[in-house]
Length: 385
Image (cartoon, rainbow, N blue to C red; front, side, top):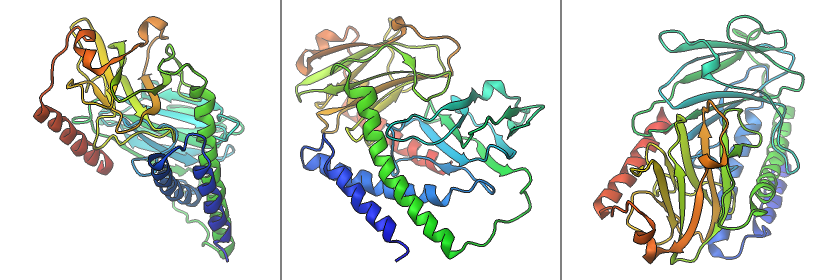
């Protein structure tokens, strides 16, 4: 059967899920199978999108195809490249906080973070008065908005980052190989289908193993209930810093994360499950940008991570996850961050929070419902944008 390798890969992927070291109970297992479903969907999509002569941008991850502690504030896109061909990207700049481009020399694997060959944001390109732009990528690219493809260039990644979910709007992007515009790819053959199902299976198993290993490598070796000073994000953009950690909290405990409100156009925090994916950020407040958060009069943002509702605007809901990941990001930076720009962490009793929050302002239940409604509406708008 043509699909047999893919079916076998699904069985191998299920074993990765059920044997994961953190899988300790029904919630972990249920979420693992949900993660598996999204990974199957994403792997098929990626295998069919592996088209370097007639490329197109694909959503790399989203609410139902999560991976790699996906940022709830970001739309991720990618297209595959040949390092010996020239490509043209045309687009229109939206009103989001950041739009960035990165060329990688491959994909993530359990032992390797792909090298970043080129990384820049839209401050480095010329955009016309109507918001449109045209970029050229190739081994001999030259002139306006031209970027050289180094040997080994394999993937173009585009990130569009939202700070104000309610008002910012995405732009438009398309890509084509410059010598293929107006032509058409060869008809699909049975051999092509066989290869694609095989590739999809390999992507599926590798995807699951890769990011479980990635989390162990970059997070789980850190002391629990702490966050690192800001540092350049591994494999990320040159203008992005992050602070990372993992928590383990009782239901009557809260982690208070205090961090200065940055002058960076984008600053955000999110929680993730032990599967190294974002928690439900549509129906729960499991992430906040600086724009969404309440900033105290002293210029600090004080986030409260807890299971119990602390009755404050900056509550990050654990949604039943006793253990999980925390990540803060700063993007579109114009300077290097120092430890003074980073977070301070305190673990306290939920009942003691009013004494720990110097500008404590209780939030009414109806105001919280409004915040969740706004997230649901904004996410739906963004998905169709």
